[in-house]
Amino acid sequence: AGEVVDLNNLEYKLKLRYEEKPDQKLVLRGDSKAFHGQIASALDIARRVGFTRASIAYDTRPLN
Image (cartoon, rainbow, N blue to C red; front, side, top):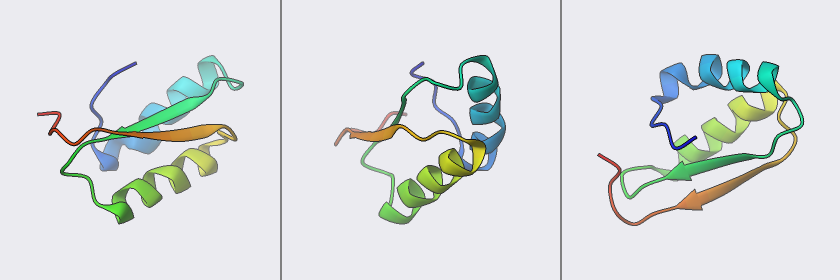
């Protein structure tokens, strides 16, 4: 939880989380550097992995 993940590694990381607990709710957190298209891509990846419950949290400050 709270891990910064590059979009290129997101599918792998989400698969690991989904395999551990498939009924968990996923919260994608973006920062001020995230573009809408990146958030949409992240949601698509989450759905492809199998997550059916996801939400978006957003912070106006950069995470790193």
